[in-house]
Length: 103
Image 1 (cartoon, rainbow, N blue to C red):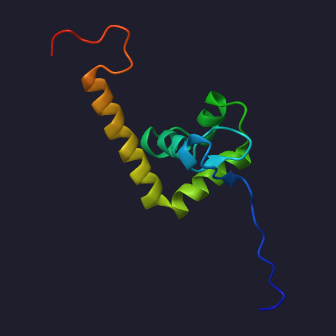
Image 2: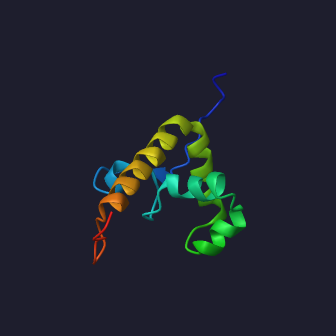
């Protein structure tokens, strides 16, 4: 077993100053969870994702998906957390120029 060399793929990175420290594709601001949402929850193909985000490569999208599946529980938790925040902000009319008057 001493002949084995573990190779690292440095495609997915995390920096607390970028996207709240959530995992992103290196050299971009694209979060792993954004790729996972498109692929898993919206049933987009890899080609659909590449069409929507032409700055990404085939390898980057697959690295994001590999990272997602290796950390599925964590990433799904982040997706749920963001959805709760979005639903609350939407209900409160946050981010709208003219918040709803009637509720």
